[in-house]
Image (cartoon, rainbow, N blue to C red; front, side, top):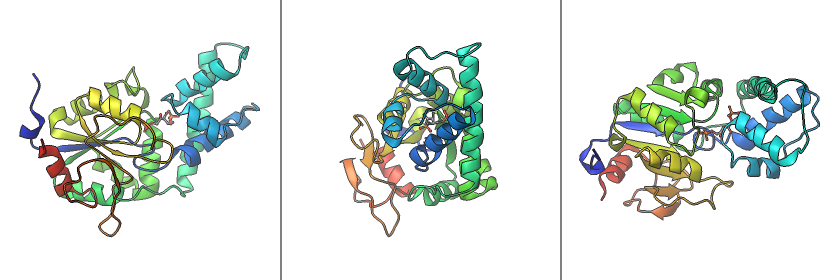
Length: 260
Ligand code: XBP
């Protein structure tokens, strides 16, 4: 049964993490991968350009496997390659968590404000991310404090689902845990693949682009912005109708949700 979205009260917000909550990819994950490579004595080094290309593949383990298959013909290890990649990825996650603890990667504009507003308005909050769960809690702890983990009714992340983005699985799992219909929620994403994952799960989606994703296809997004904005720092609308708003707040989301 398809529920007419505008007839369902907005009850939940579901956020992607990397690139949406914070710019964690080039300054976080990429550095962590390179430190794990060095730890294993591998002469691999992912510079920003290589990593931008590899970001087309969601999931760190899947990204390493893609890199090997596409760029390292003949690469082999003693034993099982997937075991090797899993071990490498565990090391990478440790480096990423350490990087988060050292601080230095802030939340994007408007994220903390919107999370706080949504909570005070009684909206449920969820996370739907391909990244490893430890990475999510490390980012939240570093930027908002460990208590902020409890703000979220679900942190759906990583291998909890079989198919990663752009498949809808992680958003469908998050909706199930929130016990909310897709028609009662709004998703927040920064990539075309993330948008397709949320849209395939039936979610209207607010896109906040970043330099790496600005040129991607965001067809079907409820609105495409350069950032969530702050009351004193207006967002730039790249596609869609902002209904006169200059930053994403809860009243704006209610307007967006009920607009035809
Ligand atoms: C981003 C991803 C993740 C991260 C790396 O997830 O695709 O793979 O790049 O994290 P999202 P892992 O945009 O859904 O937050 O190495 O833990 O996968």
